[in-house]
Each structure stands twice: as structure tokens, then as C-alpha cells.
Image (cartoon, rainbow, N blue to C red; front, side):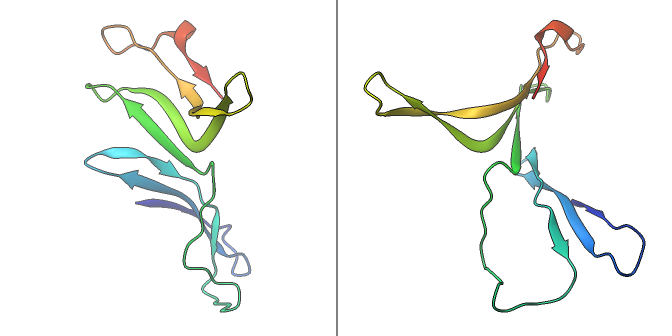
Length: 111
């Protein structure tokens, strides 16, 4: 499943805006922003392109509530000597919930 956009005129191309990522359930979405004009330019076509930060993964609990959304960008953490210690995910948003599915307003953040 994907989301496309088009301005309605014949001179403007079709764009791929969102592409959903699925496993056994929905894991997140990718926002590639690819122009789908049907033209092929063999000198610039690539078989694979990876953009860091265009994928958003939804971390859910056992009820299906989305508790956090992270992207595929790794943030570097260094130790005291300036050496690579570990990577952290970039957190785009997080939520917490009351027992009956109401989101806690004071425990939510959008990036």
C-alpha cells in the first residue's frame, strides 16, 4: 500500500509520497518522495538507493498502541576518549497511555 500525489495537470508528474512497511503487522512507513514520470534515463538509473531518515518505525505494545516512533538514522555516542561507544536511534515521537487507551498529554512529544 502506498500514497501517491498528483496536481491534476498533465504536465506535472505522479509522486510516490508514502510507502508502508509491513512484517506480520504494520511496522512503519517510508517517505521516499520519488517522481514517477514513466521516463527512463539509463545513465542515472540506480538499482538501489538508501536515504537515511526517510523510514519511520512504530514501536508498539501488546495492545497495538504506538508508544514511540523512531527513524533509521543512527546517532553516535562517544566515550570519554572520543571513541565510538554505541549508536542511539533518533526518536521522532513518544506517547504513554492510561489504562483505558487514553493518551497521557504530559507524557507525549512530537519531533
